[in-house]
Image (cartoon, rainbow, N blue to C red; front, side, top):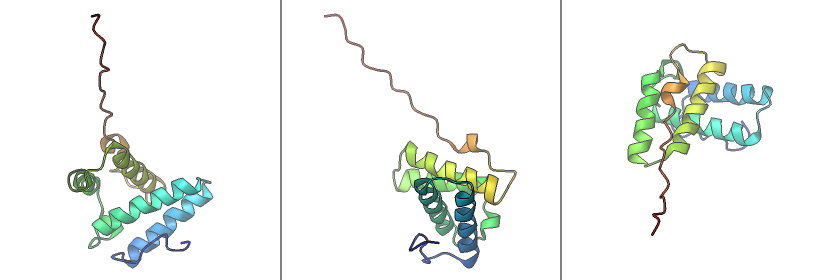
Amino acid sequence: MKGNAISRNKLSVNALDWLRQLEQTLVIKEYGPGTIRSYVQEMTLLFKFYEAQDVESITQADIEKYILHIKKVHLVGRAKCRSVAQACSFFFKKVMPSDYILPSNLYPKKQFVLPNIMSGR
């Protein structure tokens, strides 16, 4: 990893290895620097949240609990939740393929707000 992209605080060797693989896969697939930074950051936060577990044991239910946690505790919005979901989707499809990660289950639906319609006064 470049510079301080991954903090060693609370990350196991297992998690660090998977993050290196994630970054390597993103670079090989020619993703942009912003996407690489975002995906590595999102997965780092997820792995820190589940610090007592090996990465291989993280399930879709765990990811859903994490998203619920960041929504309730950190009051994050839809964009942050989508960022987490996209990073997880890439990781569990391309880096550590798993059957149980279904992106459609992880992406929060967009809330539609009806525009105010001017009354004809």
